[in-house]
Image (cartoon, rainbow, N blue to C red):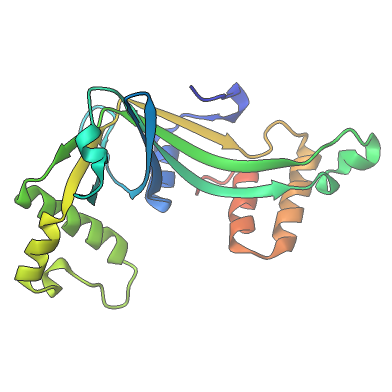
Amino acid sequence: MTYLPAHFEEADPAMLHALVSAYPLATWVVPHQGELLVNHIPFLLDAQRGEHGTLIGHVARANPVWQALTAASSVAVFTGPQAYVSPNWYPSKQAHGKVVPTWNYATVHVHGVPQAFDDPARLLDLVTRLTQTHEARQTQPWQVSDAPADYLNSMLKAIVGIEIPVQRWVGKWKVSQNRPAADQQGVVAGLMAQGSEAAAQMAALVRGEHTP
């Protein structure tokens, strides 16, 4: 379970999907024999597959996680913008001093029972889609077909596909919603003064903009 005060809950599918697309590297947690197997996997969301969409990715065949999958649900945690918030940024500090530091962040937890597959055609389709997605911004996008066929076949044999039909989405946007408007404006100003892209991304969320 996730501690999720109502004012931090984000349930808009468009927002949740956008964060997963913008920050595709998930911390994937799989229960196994009383332990938790933790891996970091870039997933692609196929929003059209299944009632709530399907995550697809792959792991190394040498990674034992794919052999440990059962009917138990796993969770993939996607972490978006995050930033430290100084109490010095709050105008309310001057008014009464009753302020403390905090940390703002946006996260998405995706729950579902994972399945493994190693059919060569499905794996080729998977790596092709992943490549096309992540190479799209390159000036000259690399394509799977750029690799020699025999080398590609050997690489496909070294991986196992993972797909997770989504059962439940949990979005938490902790972006100063619990602060007065003046304090929120102070947080935006403080973040923007840092001059970093990460701080600007969080400032946008505090302003209520809808891009993760």
